[in-house]
Image (cartoon, rainbow, N blue to C red; front, side, top):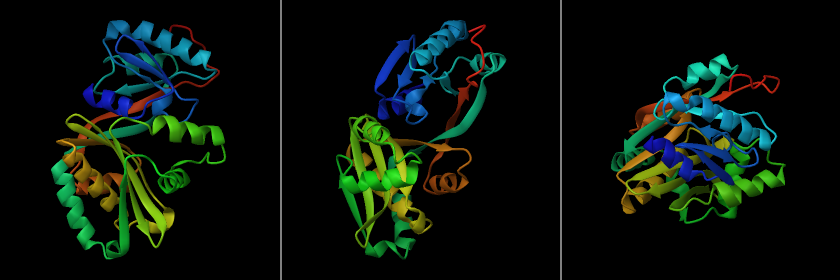
Length: 262
């Protein structure tokens, strides 16, 4: 439950309501994490949880989405949701590592990257204009929506304890990442490398700088979430010392489905 809670804190939505230990989250539809119910608790809480999630998301004119984690969710929740017509999507792995191990491994990878000598690395306490534009260009297919841009920049990226790293090549920001330090844990998120600069070691440079910052802020451990389908990113993270901790999926239901039994 700890890592799921830390990840929820690191990506703060516009609105959060609690049902027991579960969190109902809303951020105008931008990203799954900020617009899903982080399910937690015991099996006897499942009916009330699903009912509350259904009502909450109906008030926001959308179908309910529940994040079902092997570390936090009621043990029978996935089976119960399946009987209601929900299906799992976006299977994701949560990885952890010792922060010093990541810093050392990333430093070694940077030395081996022939392009790295010409790069400039920047660390800022807030997302700069260039950082945000580089992240948005890679991560979002909805870049023409100014409302979602504002939510991402001014809400989701405003986590306490944040630091933002950019790798700049010839005046162009080519890779970025964010770290959120919370006690002994540092969460990595918003890793993005521009399409024309991948597989050159820029992501390793970003992770190394994030890890060094985390160690300097007193964090002993790091965590991140990566889509199971993103084999390239998973391979990079494992090479830098990350290993699996737990998994989660988002359970969604087609809009035409009824709410019977919830």
